[in-house]
Image 1 (cartoon, rainbow, N blue to C red):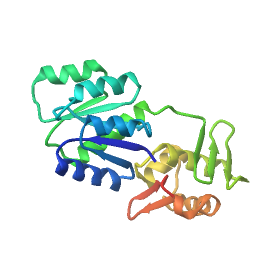
Image 2: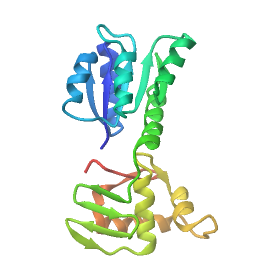
Image 3: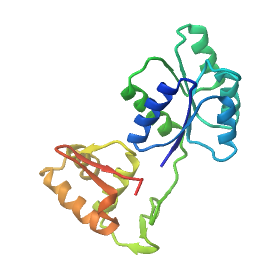
Length: 218
């Protein structure tokens, strides 16, 4: 689960944005100013910081410059509309820049895209008691090896790499079986059921009348 710092002096914006991020599966720390953010940084390094520019005390540009030097991705949030402010933020090295007010769906999409760009890909995925080596195609659960068929492994890999994005049955068919596969989407359901039995049913969430999503928070 990725940790996101929400640094914003407006308590309403901070609370609502934090709520939407949590519902999307992120761990969120809501921080009212740069001083609180610096104190939190001494405890943990977030995957991303959503950073307001106009705050009392140290402003967002100053804190953002520090975060970027520490190689922590930043998305600036501000009500300012001046092009010069946007250019300044991007020249500092910010990943993105969102003008307030913004729609939660837009913010979540930008957060997800930023994390996809900035998080280092690894050959080994490990969460809880599940460990997957994408290079050797080995899987362990609770320290014990799990035997998967080629299709089951490819299905698991596709779900993991999709992050919090739900994939439709057709998308899974195309990704795992190939565009030329002639068959019904029921094939996906059967393999999902088998995969759940091997890695834990709770790890794959069913999206009703659509498809499936991999869960990292279990």
